[in-house]
Image 1 (cartoon, rainbow, N blue to C red):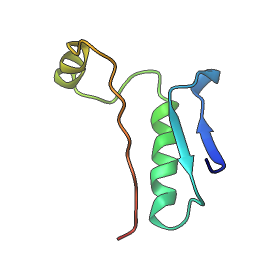
Image 2: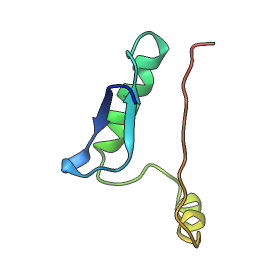
Image 3: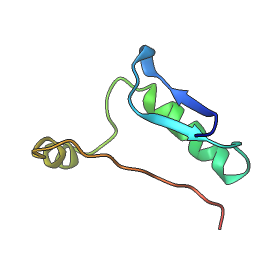
Image 4: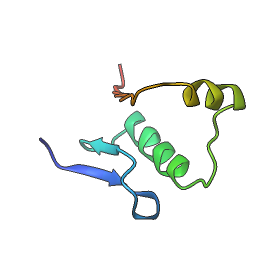
Amino acid sequence: MFPAVLILPEGEDVGLRYYGLPHGYELGSLIGAVLEAGKRESSLSPESLERLGALEQDLAIDVFVTPT
């Protein structure tokens, strides 16, 4: 595909990739992803973690950011 920035907390590929030039509003998304990946604990609520733990299959979530 295109060159990407991979965010690898402690060398582990957790699936975070940033494609394109981080510019304007997109820069905030990249910085937020780096900060979130650097945390040792999730910032999700206990309820969200419980619901995610109940999933019976793997799930892929794609997030796209645009300044419009």
